[in-house]
Length: 443
Image (cartoon, rainbow, N blue to C red; front, side, top):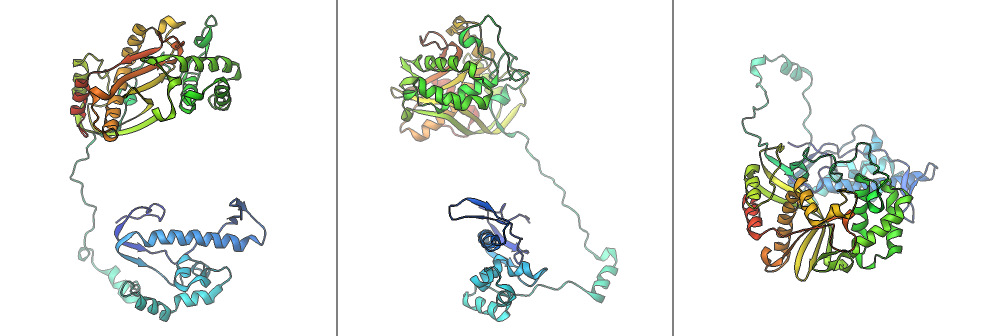
């Protein structure tokens, strides 16, 4: 037996449904929508009729939901119960007696029409057997009730909750890259750990983007900008207009706007794949913030770790939060794009690695990716993207259709293409091995 409100029952169905309080109605508040659709709170005497009509309409919609939950049978309770005003103004009165019962001020006469046994029998006869009228059983009273109370305890059936003898698996979970590396990152990884005071001021000797604040607020702002910008039309005026709207949400002051606007221009102009720049990507060639959930069959994290290390990747960090799992992997890919028939995934990082562009050279980026286990992140993303393409791209094969990974360390993207971009294309054998371990959606 499940006890639910009508709101919670929306979209569900049950073999048999009981509606023990269908006779009642709640008092309307002086709120309604005017002719222009605006919500009005009206305390004047004239507000009553409009508010009651709108309230009744909502109650009728809820009654419709309640009446359509059953597969086989619905039991309704209808009578003069409690205050007469509650029954008279109920949605069931309107349904049984017609519109008059729901009109404000219709009064007892409308209720009498709805409760008249002859009227109810006529409804049942006209239903072709779909409606039956019955009487609720009366509770035991007087001597019968006293006799039941005086019956010996052994005569009554012993009632007790059933003992649970099954098992509840604790390995089913919704997991993500963040859960796998939780507690592993060093505090310097500002993309994963916010600064203790919310924002860390850089040393005074730094200049340009390297002097911008460190912390999650700047990272969130840059993600929001790059998610919303139309790359091909993102001239300085468009960037500044969007920046002025978004920066206050993340606590980034106007004193940084000039530097950030120029920085965005350099990011969009930096080659990231065979000469392709973000500025070259049209709206039809990119997906921003692609969220995913993919099913993972039962497996041990040690198996996943062994596959990663066998192909030269860092594996699952020590101190993993659990040893085995099944369920779902979830995440959100900052950018998916196509170029020359191949699919790529990209992730934006505002991680501060050093005081100038030399800290963002390819070899330094490789070290940062391994130290922060970003390779684990993008391998999970690759599995998700491969499954996405397999469903949507005819004849999809990873080896022929995947362009690879681009992790964009934004502070190092100066427009030259020599710094700030970490590129990788894991071999098909690795992705296939990950699919075998994770299961759930193998080719």
